[in-house]
Length: 94
Length: 264
Image (cartoon, rainbow over all chains, first blue to last red; front, side, top):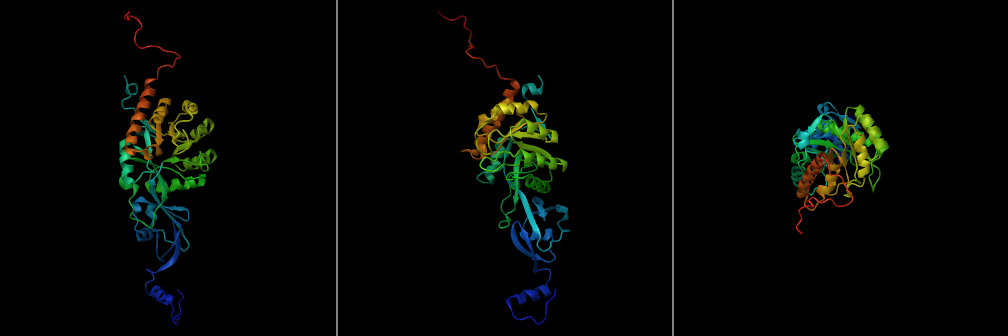
């Protein structure tokens, strides 16, 4: 990550510092989940996203950029910037 | 007498799956999930339709349908309600298959409000793609014998014409057309949509339908659980009447009591 050591003091500076020291925990990807923009960690995958959202993966289906992600592939499917994610489940219907 | 003649163990089969109940119910439009569960239980249904929608990310711990209507006990039949194109319907059912792991689905491609009348061009297009992709498609359709035949020839496992627009409760407006569809079909025929009260469901079964699919007639009844019981009884009554064969209609009286031996 290209960060100059002589950055001016600004609100963003502490975030940049954190990104350098804890790169896995700081949101660095911008994705859209069910129509809402979210930021997730650079190493995020479908499994970590579902966990972060507090969802039960056994009752869901996930689409990434209009391609279904099989449940067995959640860990192996990394998120990339600007991904469009749909997470659906069954609800009452006729 | 065999079991069909007596009406005992009168099961039906769709896509190789055997069911005893000839009532399929929706799981939508109830007051809450407790009422959904109670009404479905009372209906005796073994198949329930469900919709596929985005998870509410703001409330990940919201109660889920599966917690109240157990997919191990009921056959979930995912629908494509709200889909107005073949693409949307196919995409929805692929997600449903991933979420639930089953291939038996209800396809509906709808025309615009206020009638949501089946869009047969879109329905045929979607059916073709889904069947090629390994789905077993029960299809909501118009009471159009030509389109229904094409759907059957494509490989749809059940033909499900409307009796009246979705959620209208107008009852069967097309018994003659339904009879034509029943006559030509080699797969189960179900009335799907339009049933308003128990007698409508009974009429569908008397016509010879294999089963009836409904939702609003129960969910929007004054007492949904009671109406669910009524629908169960109506479907059974209509089915038995169909098997029994109704008496011929005649113009004029034909008294049951003898006209001889009368007191004078």
